[in-house]
Image: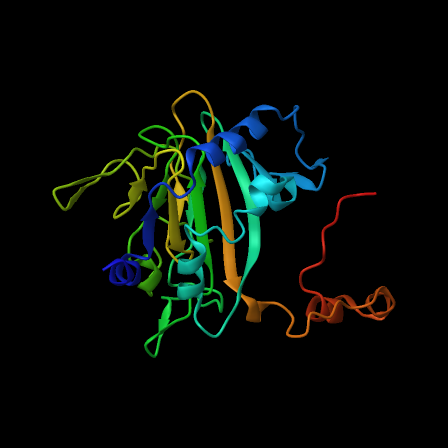
Length: 272
C-alpha cells in the first residue's frame, strides 16, 4: 500500500525517522553555532541562501561531523531511496543541507511533472522504479500550523500541465500561505495553492518525495525558526561513469562552451 500511494501521490511520511537522542545531538550542535554570515564558510560547510525569504542553508552538512554522516545511509530511509531510485542505479547525494527559516520566511512553489527534464518524471517506467530525484526532509523541530510547512500538490509529478498558480518562469512566492487540512478524506482549501496540502511533522519525522512534485513552503508566521534537514538523492548514472576529474591543464585550454560539457558542475571547495 505504501508503494502504491507513493506512486499515486509522490510522497510518503516517515514517522520517528531519527530517534530522540540523535535529534537532540543535532539540535545541540545547531544551538552551539556562532553567528553565521551568508557566503562565508563554517569549516567545510557553506552558509548559503537562495534569496531573502528562504532562510539560511548550511550546505554540505555531511561535513559537520558523525551525527550528520550517519544520515547518509540512515536505515529509516535508505532502503526506500534505493528502491525508488531503481535497481539499476546506486543513489548518490546531490545535495545535503540544513535549512533555518524564521518568521516571514517561505519558498516559492516550483517543480511539477510538466518540466521535461531528465532528472524528473513520474518515477515508473515499464513496471520498474526510476525516480530521477528524491528529496528527503526531516523536521528537527515540530512543523505545524504557522511554522512554514512544506506544501506539495499530490500527484502533480504525473501532470503534463503546469500548476496555474505558477508564474511563467515556474515560480510563485507564497506570501500568504495558510494551511490546508485533510478532513474525512476531502481537502479544505485555504489561501495557498489550490490542490496543495501542508506536510505537518513532529520533530524527528521525515517526508520522502519525488522531487518532480509541485512543491514549496508556506510563510512562517510563528516565532522561532523552522529547522529542517534536507538530502537529495539521484541515480549514480548522473555522475561520471568512471569518476574521472578533468585536469586543470585541460580545463585551462578549453573554451567556455567545451568546459561546460566536460565539467558542468564545477567543484566548490572551501577557500584556502
